[in-house]
Image 1 (spheres, rainbow, N blue to C red):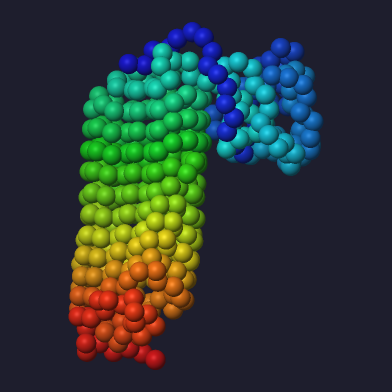
Image 2 (cartoon, rainbow, N blue to C red):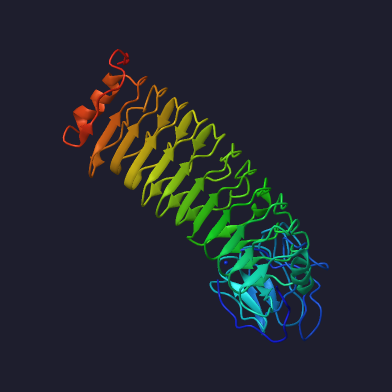
Length: 389
């Protein structure tokens, strides 16, 4: 159970948001912000000293904050403190507050002073106790792990989780409403085994460090809407979510390890338009409703491509792929084209394109002719299929 405790917590530095809200410091109020900020744009200014004098305004431990242009501290969500900031590192913060490079260089966030660095919420009373602190930074791991949780409303002040973010074993929690202000998670995110969770869109402002994202066994989850701001991750996995149909909300630019979609019941298309490089592999398998795999900008795939056992799959688009470790495209009975992999120039290991009974063998033969040594199993497709010149 989460309990508040007296005393400060040490500071850290992490990055690019708004300096907003009402100043609370030694010398007097900050009149540049126009009162209390919206939870998404700021809060209290607790910088520890001096004036930060740049084109984005002047802000310190006292006096007025002056903006040179644009929206000020009470402006747009996720905006700067006004104008073009010249800050290159985080401002200093007074005890009990931290600045995070990954969120905002000119902003001090209030630390959650709890009994232990890891915060675990098991009951609604735990949620209420954390909400009462009106704090912004979880100092380590943050877990929601109980069937007794049904609402996170009241946690709108939370901005940063410095450890792992875990949601598991909830039954009546249907959305993450209440976490709308969350801006940054520094460790792995696991949302697994939640039977009632439908909607994660409250995470729409969240960015992450290079972490693993895992969504597994969520019986009611329908969409990955809420992951739009997550652009660089260590790895991604969506498995065994039977109602998951829309995965368009997740479109990273790079993944350092693996991307895995398998056994989700209702995904009609895996479309990753922004993904350029994957250090590990990509797997799309046992997706019962998936008709299309579209990763058109993917240039580099460090290990393996596996597309297999998808009964409704019609097409694959990997038109920008130039290098891959290995390729397996197998047992997709309705697949009619791989797109021919037109730019593929290097295959480190082997190619296997087999047992796709609607895929013209002539298309596979053209690929095999370019990579004869690598194409170990490029047979048993549709021998009567027609290829257009």
